[in-house]
Image (cartoon, rainbow, N blue to C red; front, side):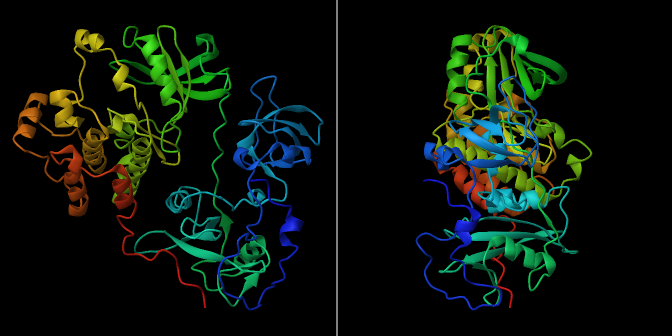
Length: 497
């Protein structure tokens, strides 16, 4: 699919103005969706030949001689748009170089608007609007998940009894062009609609006061920087250590902040590791920690994205983490389930799912780490080191017969839920590993933790069903956890009258 036309082209047939009567009928086959985000899947070489001009959405410091530094707001002509890095020419300085494609948007496109978040999901919109830095009246516009060719307006509302909540309004399209939330008030363009409701609430829960704070996207990793030399990494601060190695905050080429896992020599076979790592890097999802690069000579280094709040287990024990309320804890659980649902769809497994392997970002986004690593840790190394096998998180069939499947991951997820709801308490408190194994064989299950709602405990018990095939899917777990507090709520607010 090629790019949509310019702003003028999009609005040329939009004849509706404020106060006109909308004509309701089936959605048009090619609706006036406005202006489309610059994304490699939406571009073809013809676009570049047509003098594609983009605008920088964020500052970007050049990290090599090939890169072109970006200053937020400057305009550039795209010369080549292949892959995640595009060759571009600055229209102000005339300099040429490579730019990250996710840092720019087409000039006169919706992505120029600070309030437009395109493909953001309903749940992530709520998480973002409720994150620090946003206040009552903060808002964003996104594509509707439930109605094709429609938009949704998400607004932060104040509620003294329940705390701040997010209200969602459907933005409908008109056959002849134009948009409306309330049938009595229509607008030629989305910016006009947003401007109107920024001036007055006019039936919405709040007047729109400020666009939702956006997070600077991750810089794309160059495709040719997969197996990297150890000298290109600078280890700065040790974040933690475990039985197989250490984790450091560091820098790649002195200016790209990363996390580096250094593996003890002999902990894994380099060839087996590289084969597994090539599979791991294909798993890409916003709830999985991104694998960037590897050092394949002993000692092996694994380079990933850096997560500011460290592992979930440690974070829950901090002053900030220990004050999280139950809805936030369940939301974190839903995020982990979302990442595991992706792993499930990709026919992969984790094998070591626990709070210590979930990392937390500055905005409290939870991402799954170390997927696939457990399988390639050398058995000889485990035996000689007397390593601590995570018995308390492991499903009975995996303990007894070494059978690891996505259903054994579901069992581990049930244990992880108890870690989250108890702010990092070790599972089966007071029990040794042999006691846990004996008790599980007798049908014992951990009792409901204090402060854990019975509805949540029932979900946990489903994860611990004895027969693996009777345990729920991660898709189901994601759904019930995301809707834990909203199952009885309406999907959209009613149209303002």
